[in-house]
Image 1 (tube, rainbow, N blue to C red):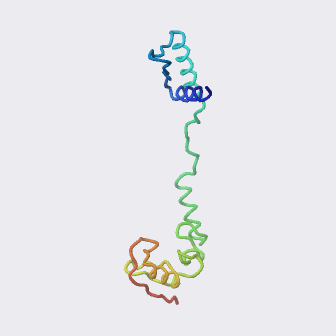
Image 2 (cartoon, rainbow, N blue to C red):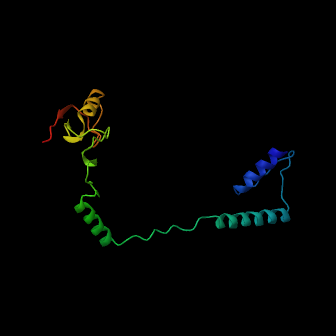
Image 3 (cartoon, one colour):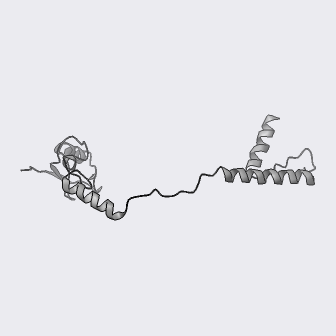
Length: 143
């Protein structure tokens, strides 16, 4: 009987009515039972609306001019920003430990150290930047 109650509750939460047969005659609800179901569904709809989160509003951001001047000042100071300063833009994009000193062919991206470049070539992998197939690598010596 608990399973039957669970199924009936499940169907009612979906807005469906369980019409179960107890013999050849269909189950027909009385007017009072139909009205009780309508009011229960209306109440369920109202509580579902009350549980909805408030509408999304974007956070207050600084004006574009303020953001642009702050980023420009940061880049000029060498503190990073887009493209960054420091050593981060010279690190191998694969291992992040060694300096970039290997050019991948045919795309000519200078993005890996020699060890990672050899590993990518041996695995017949793609360039980590553009995903083109690597056919050969060239070692680069910085002055």
